[in-house]
Image (cartoon, rainbow, N blue to C red; front, side):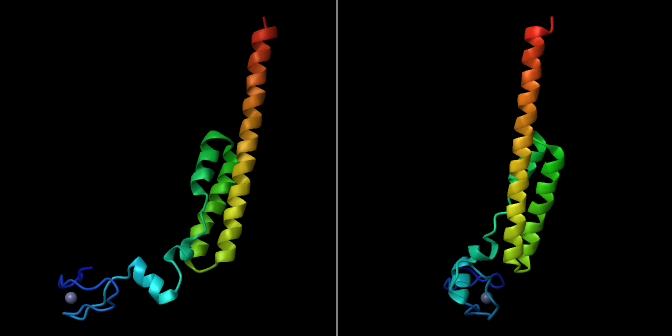
Length: 123
Ligand SMILES: [Zn+2]
């Protein structure tokens, strides 16, 4: 790891640069040493935002937007350390994703049914 200030090479676990004394940037390895936990635990809550957006685009717009709103809350809550709140928001986002997928599938089936009925009996 190189010092960002003077370019001196330091060991990866160095807290300060050996030449100029500048604080070294926090790496994953040092974070683990400092806290005893992998850094991923800070942001371990997956926000389901991708699924919420997909659900909105392809399934059901109103319920998909609810999922996006919850998914957007996850990162903010995780960032301030509210892991329980972030998990709850992620769970809500996932639930609304499934509602969207379910409704989307329902409407697709209804639509397909109408198309088939029209093609079969509509002449
Ligand atoms: Zn330095």
